[in-house]
Image (cartoon, rainbow, N blue to C red):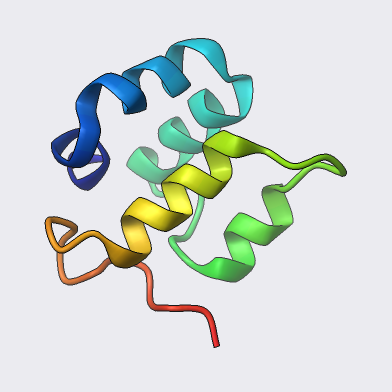
Length: 75
């Protein structure tokens, strides 16, 4: 969560407040209930596109402020 808040705290907090998916994902990542892998994130994707999930994935995968790029790039 630190990487998300350090990158763009306002946008992250907005997603956490407005998106049920982001709230559940943030809680589950912080508690360790959800692994930080592309497979785990893909399993959470609903049938429709979820901007919050895409944002979390982008920040955690490419942000230099993220702890050692917590999420490896997709191959």
